[in-house]
Length: 235
Length: 295
Ligand SMILES: Nc1ncnc2c1ncn2[C@@H]1O[C@H](COP(=O)(O)OP(=O)(O)O)[C@@H](O)[C@H]1O
Ligand SMILES: [Mg+2]
Image (cartoon, rainbow over all chains, first blue to last red; front, side):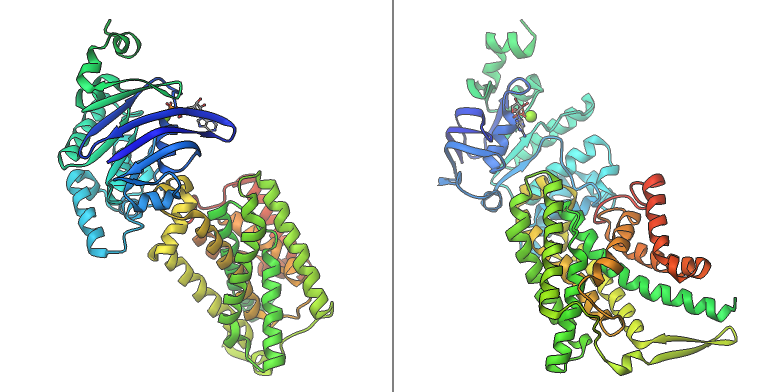
């Protein structure tokens, strides 16, 4: 579904990603883990067309998209839920969700998606008219994920959905992600929460210094000695 | 002082405030979405006045009839200025963009002077100078049709623009771009197109206000700068930079405040009122009386 070949990207003259190659199959949940500053967010933004492209290819459902504008990539179904949520702070929950479907001209389809998101996160139905910035961190994260789902993703990119959330809320978030996956969504997720992420991921890539250092099945990586030493603290 | 005279002055202030509100709405829109302080804003108002003058003198068209055309023309002109001069500087420090708008302002004043000359001119629409007389407080209050129409239309347009911000796709896109341009792009919103439309509409609203007041004020190339620029900035800061409803309410407040100031201190001191409000707001309420962006 999503195929990345030798992708390089960065900010101006500063190159961050070096020949990153990875694939996400249809219906798969693929995790990207790695230390702070490894370039995980830069990778997400390179996929969305939000940082400077420096080479390589990105194919979505077989078609090249690395030359497309950010809007065109959204239109093709590559949707990112960014790190730190980035909601529209002074819009209501319903308005934030509505903005996710900005490119969808079909009112009935927008309502269907809205219904689906409120079914996934019932709290968003109750809080429909609440101003987004007045919600708790966990609720805001639900709005952010809901907003991304409103765009009708073929591939959903989630950048650190559990960042800054209380442990109990983190578990809820992982449950929600599991439900989205069970609906058949193709997901690529970046997480600091390595243990919990590798348990739910089909496959995972370890990104270090802007390059892929390791890849494997989620549960296999949990047993990998390098992973244990560097990320899991279980050695 | 007589009550009827006081009422007259306050009402005139309110009417003036409606026009201020429309001018300030355009300015706050541009700031809210693009974070650009547009020093050329008043020149678009002046240009609107002169376009109304041309339409009247060359084609015999009433300013109120051509106002929509003037709005459209200046929208396109503003968008073109944005595209050619400001867009390339959007990634650079804000001071660059400010200097560019000052450049546009100087250019427009020069061009207006070149085309229409430096002298005072007015759209001679005699009926608009007639007054509506109302019995009140044992006296008579007279309000010219020109000012009544300018007020009514300005408020109506500002209200429509406010509605459009919340209920149209483009308006929602502007609010999104204003509140988080990065996320807006991740939602598929073409922020550079939003910027183009925003600057165009902002300039167009100023020109529309200019057309509306053209039968009531003598125009000259620096009219906008002298009579509206500072006041519009005061209103936008008072109503919180980038807050559309704030600019609407702020316009009315400043219109009335100036009238009261003129009443207490004498007409010559009117401009002092805006300046004093400006200083007080900047000192004690630096973020204005409202919070937030295009809410
Ligand atoms: N806007 C930016 N301009 C320049 N450098 C940046 C920018 N954003 C991130 N970086 C740098 O890119 C590197 C990778 O950052 P990031 O992708 O955010 O890492 P991660 O998400 O893995 O923590 C870091 O060294 C960071 O300092
Ligand atoms: Mg990150």
